[in-house]
Image 1 (cartoon, rainbow, N blue to C red):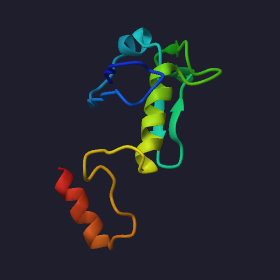
Image 2 (tube, rainbow, N blue to C red):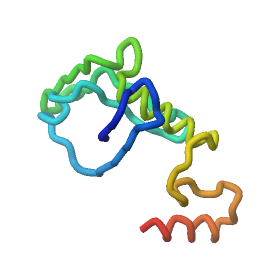
Image 3 (spheres, helix red, strand yellow):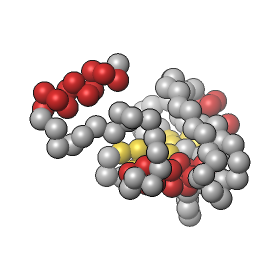
Image 4 (cartoon, rainbow, N blue to C red):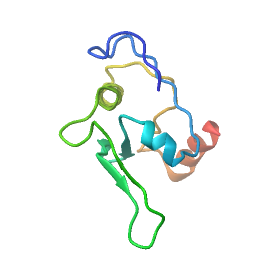
Length: 112
């Protein structure tokens, strides 16, 4: 994500998202990490590690133990503003949950 302006205000933030595979090196260089979910919104991650019998990896992030880091906190604020209609976002980013199954599928196909 890229940001412009102060992280104290979500008014001048520009966010771009890119999907790609990450390497362990990418994670080791990161200062923040989070996961997303419908009910969980954005949740900061303090540590990622492998389990027994797997190639060893243990990455700890400076942010996430006590509170979200500045990027995660800003993205969460933006998400909540969009969810509550306080922020104008691109049309179609959020599907109508009350639409029929057929209509809901149409909304999904338009995004592809």
